[in-house]
Amino acid sequence: MKPNIGITEQARQTVSNQLAKLLADEFLLYTKTRNAHWNVEGPDFHAMHLFFETQYEQLDEMMDSVAERIRQLGHYAPGTLKNFLALTHLTDMAEGSNDSISYIKELLADHESIIEFVRGNIDPIANEHHDQGTSDFLTGLMENHEKMAWMLRAHVK
Image 1 (cartoon, helix red, strand yellow):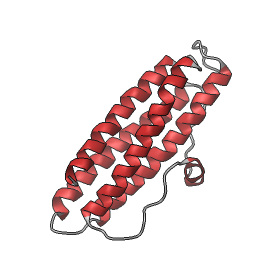
Image 2 (cartoon, one colour):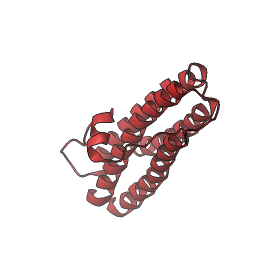
Image 3 (cartoon, rainbow, N blue to C red):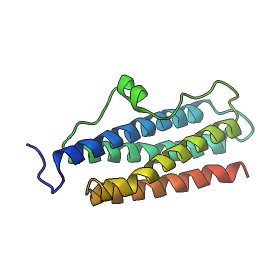
Image 4 (cartoon, rainbow, N blue to C red):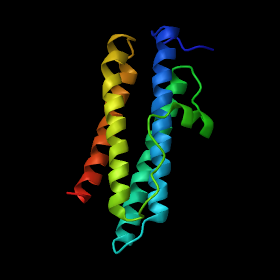
């Protein structure tokens, strides 16, 4: 049964498509953060191992909320690696050093990319597609990414 929530099918489809791209970005960032957690080396190993764990746990919750928002709009969330790789704006992690600063710089760039993507969708989703619920959801998600980016940025200052 299709949702009858005051948003046209076309608007729900368009919004869900944008959310699918965001979900792909969230999944790739989650995977890259897991990689940092597993493979970080150096004198700050223990602290950074725990820090990256905190970050990927937050991303796991955020990723789940994006998928659930897509479902609330009456569409299916992408859930395969093939789909995620086709939809993401991010790139796979560059091969290089396993030190914390290298990981942090790459993860920070990805958070900032997601922040820009989300920020660019907040007003159009509210104003053009009349979906204030998703617009509000995205604002909260953006704020979470901004805080996570700040935490990363503080390590390289």
